[in-house]
Figure 1 (tube, rainbow, N blue to C red):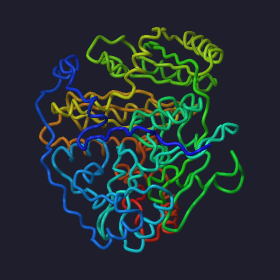
Figure 2: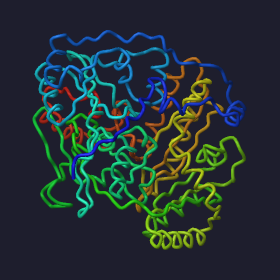
Figure 3: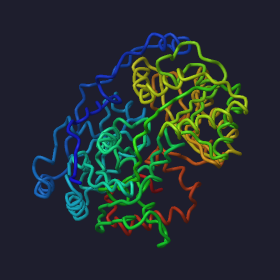
Length: 531
């Protein structure tokens, strides 16, 4: 096949908000009424009249970059540099809204090929320039905040020009994708061939293929389609040491340790992923989503475990706790309305008519036997329609002075209740009376599950400091409970201080050794991932 590229560019996210500016909206009246019962609402607009710090990169180094990839692809204007400053976590946005642009890159470079990326890294290594790979800018754990000290400057390596379907093997069901393709672009290119990837995280509309790989992303259909790293067959990466190609010979092998895993989840610290080969599947002919009601979070979790351990997982499976169900967070169209009570579970089925009908019948029989109450398709369809909208609501709440943020973790089933209680207690203790802590089980395995928390609290005069204190408390509780510091948001800088207890001192030494070998000058995303 010939290489194909999307014909329409998607909008840039504004620096102080999430998503498409056309989709941003004031806080809905129902939500305003609900949060107004708990919090004192105000008006906290973002500052837009801020000045981006001057570039620190010497002109002769900028000229070297221009000579390598072309004048048009090396950008120094303030607006572009601001758009490439940090990610989209609440702390990132609070800093942007207050006018803090201290982490702005000195220059934005836009390579168009693997060779361009390699040329940039060669220059950066020789002249000690820090390089921060940038995909969709959806990072939420400080993965786009590089250490500046000791470097001649910081380059934002914007991979947006590398957005093609490079190769397709329909016989083997694999596709090779450019790292700069956003989720919808990749799905649209594959759909032209009757295929799909099936990776739909909440960041789907703006996150990229390279970002999915570099953070070991997990999507809302992971019960049926798996995590993104499980979809990856092979990859190509540029490093200061040279080119790396991994996994391109077979679907699986016993040729030593799987070196793909060094780059999956490496967050740009070991190399820049320039191609990703993934497993693809036929587009589903049928999509059906339903709701189920459970008397308690414990009962719903037990049902999820039964499905996972009985090989009965649907394509989509998630469970809201009592608090999240009460305010209808799984249904953005109905937040502030009267919830169904108990705990809401969403199930989804995708595939051929016969396969979908068979799986739905088996799951329905199992859930009914376990004590679930079917609610029909309306809750499921409402969830599907608003599945990517929560970040817009977060921004609208920030506008009125409500501090909103999310965090996630993962553990074994036997530890779920202990972890759930510990994290809730830590957050409520740190943020004080009136804090709303909501939770849902977002991803399930035969052996365990991921807990995804949404927190709303009074912002006060120092919302950033309040959240950082609460996040430290939650991280401490996660580690003390024997769980993982992250399931799918990655390590970045926010979780780096809690990684050693999880992987041990020897594990840290291994990461540092790989870093020294692949990136001896330490130019790749310095300060991220590695303790």
